[in-house]
Length: 285
Picture 1: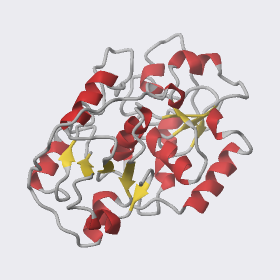
Picture 2: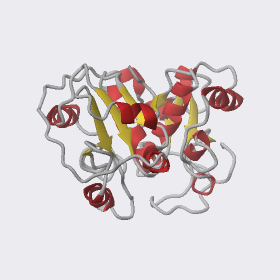
Picture 3: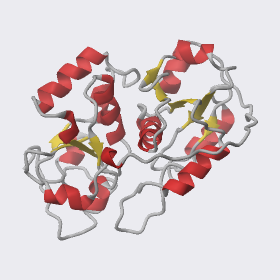
Picture 4: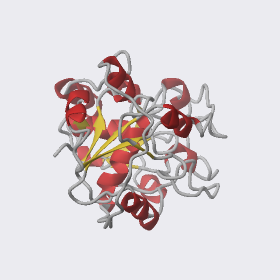
C-alpha cells in the first residue's frame, strides 16, 4: 500500500492492474480548462481526469475561499463513479509541482482512504523516463465509495482565530515569499498573511527543478528547523486557497512528521472578512 509517493517505475509496473486507478489532476488557475484539454491530448495510460474546480472543490460563496472543500457526499459520489473501492490504490499526478495531485491525496486521506499516493515527479518525471502516453478513455465500473471523515485533519477560520499566537498552533503559509509578504498579490483582493504564520514555499518540498520530492531525511531536517520540537499535530498549513498547502502536508508526512492539519479556506477565505486581522512584510507578525 502506497500512502505518500509512488515512483514512475512502480506505477508503470501497475498500469494493467485493475486495483490501481490513476488520476490526472492538471490545472491552471488562469486557464481553468487547460487540464481537461491537456488530458484529452495525452495522458498516462488509463488515467482518469479530475478538475480542480469541479471535482476537487465545492461552490464558492464569496466568503469561503477560492477552492472550498467539496461536499462529502458529492465527492464520495464522484469517487464511486470512478470505481474507487477500499482496495483501490489511487495515484494522482499533475504538471504543476504536484500541487493539485496533493489536493486529491489530501481529500482522500481526509475521507478515510489511505491507499492514495502522489506520483513522484508527476508528468514531467514520467516523460523523463520516456514512458508512454495515450489518449484512450478508460472504461470504469462504478463502485460505492463510503467516506469515513477524519475531522482531526482540518481546522476552520474560527479555530485559527481562537488560536492565533497560542503555543498550541503554528501556522505555515505555503505561498511564495512575495505573496506571503503582501508584495505581489495576484489572486486575492487583500495582500498579506495571517498573523503569526511562518512562510515555507511549497516548492521547497521539491528538488531544484521542482519535479521530484526531496528525500525524507532532508524534508525532516528542514521541517524540524522550522517547527522545532513542536508536536506536528499543532501545525496548521495554509496557502491561498487550500491547494498548495497540501504539498507541505504531504512533505511532513513523507518526513515522518505525521498529523499536521489543513486550513482549507486559507488566505482567500480569511481575507474575505475585513474584521479578521492580517499583517504584511516578510515576518510572521
